[in-house]
Image 1 (tube, rainbow, N blue to C red):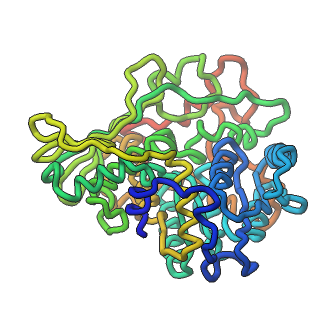
Image 2: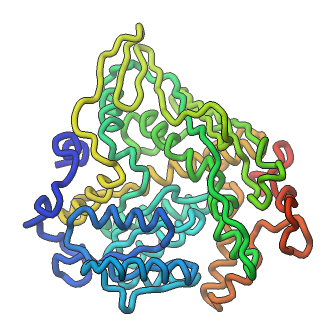
Image 3: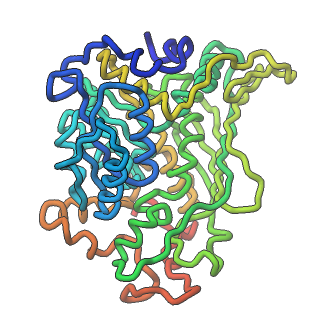
Length: 459
């Protein structure tokens, strides 16, 4: 069955019994048996959560490797898994840490979960595909245009190698969303004119500096506050809503060439995070508004904000000539309910892993990386437009968009001396010269905050 039909009829794989008797597709794993060897790259909260969700599939798997840039993170995860006394873990020789740890973990597995900081994902995804591994990769896929092009190139190679790729845009595995897209494809709201997508919420975590931290270590621990690592909140978080927008505006076919807007104008800023109580919190914006235009003339109006005690909304609504819709519902032009989702609605975070197992076991062609890369780049386009204050076309952003992630530095260090990574200077530095530990209350990254009208998106 196709993914949509499978989710509609069953919702979930019924544990181990649903996979009993399935033969592993040729090339599914290196050993040739029905055992799939898993690796986790990125041992933070999302990575460990994704691994747990994968294990809950009830499939015949064994975790043979874990990796993290930080030694303490990799060892803490290994110790936690050891205490679980679960025979699905065999990490005796599979705990790796450092800049190049991902290579060792990927080399040891058949299927890998990539949940590192977003800036690193194009590199890690590319390597996994080169090594012929099935991939579950968290969103977003990239933080800049160069990373997007790397992800697209890897997606093409994954297809050539018949690798199964699932990405963490879990709404594609959530039945109310799947049903809504089907309703749009059937013309229930008429011609789509525009959409409103939101992720307006509170702020996020901050981790204090630790004694002895280098600047690189501090920024890596606080990756969500530095754009070379997270891409800003429009990319790291709001990309979910933007992804749904692309999905619907492309009429449910996210693999087609026009599954993204053709241009964007935007605005945004740093209204609250500039205050002293947000010291040492990087150089991100705290709000964005974007107007994306698609090839057919339809538009997507996008809001995201991370400011406490304000109006919050996380949703997507689509407006057509004959009605409107959202996840699990459709109204006609008069506001009358004409469709409501009814049926199973299992946890999409688990569903995406369950379906990944099925794609591997049944050798079903599947590659989320195409639409995931498009949605990530759409978010990048919005950030380029907001930072610069310019209207930017998709083609220009892809071809000329500036790098945020230091690809060349990372490649050079991997090839020469990975252990020097923690002493290297990141692309964003404190306002002090040379970089020093900040004084209490000092705003040390304000000089790095983009200024609309001055920031060069194509530098």
